[in-house]
Every structure is written in C-alpha cells, then in structure tokens.
Image (cartoon, rainbow, N blue to C red; front, side):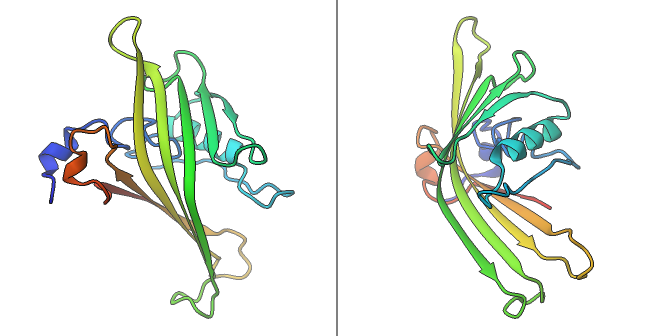
Length: 193
C-alpha cells in the first residue's frame, strides 16, 4: 500500500510537520541550528537535560524550555519537558517515552571510511500537551518516531571534533485515520547533519 504525497502532507499529525512535534529537532525545516550536546562524566551517557533544552531552544531560535525532568536511575525511558508559559504555540509540556535502544561501534579497520563509527538508535513515543483553538479545551497530540544517529571520529588525528548525522523516521500513530494504510513503515524520513 502507498499513501499519496498530497494526502500525506495534508496530515499535520505526522511528526515533523509542526514545530515541536519532534522534540529533539523542534523545527525540522530550519536551515542551520547550533546547540550543545554533552556526555556526563560520571555515567558516560548523554546529558539528556542539556542536550534537549539546548536543541529545542536552538531549533526555535529563542529560550522556551523551562525545565527538562529526567532521572536515568529512576526511569531511563521517560523524559518530561516543561515550557515557559506562552513561549510556544504548539506545546506547554512534552512527555517522551523512549525504548528500543540499540548501539554498535564499528572500528576504523572495519569501516569503509577508515573512521571509527558509532551508531545508535532509539524509538520514541511523544505526547505533546498544549492549548487548542477551542477555549478551555486542552490539546493532546501523540506521535511516534525513531532517531538513528551516526557519529564518525575525526579524519585528522589532531582534531577532537566528531561529525554526526541524525535520521528521524516518522510513523503514523495508531489513532491516525491513515494508520492501516501503513501501520509499520515510516511515512517520512528527515536527515540532519
């Protein structure tokens, strides 16, 4: 089964078609975005609080995140993002439910590029809460997507800068009227270097 492009782009419920419908890439159409990612020195894991807040603010072009609530020891699969009131049109709060994590390290000897490559993937269900156009009615939108990161070591051994690419595959939600036309494959894929 295939869904026509016209039908697909008319569906604003697909992750990426509205700002903040993919938390990590708050505006998928933005040409250039700068933000900070960091590895926590004690856990050796990504500092999700810093990465998400700087990425969202960077993609929006202004400070909008009030707080990222994440405790990897208590629940590594849940992240809450709270926004400064009236700073965003599409979200007051975002809940992320992460699962299906995978990773692989490819040595420079095994890699076609001759660089060490780190691959990681994660599937996310995002629930966005915000205001609707109807007075007094809250808006709740669910979306499903997967992030596929590729990180490469520097070609020049004197450099400490790694390069990365993020592919985001957006899937139809089970509540979407088009879900049974494509229940398991991504309907849109975004790429960011």
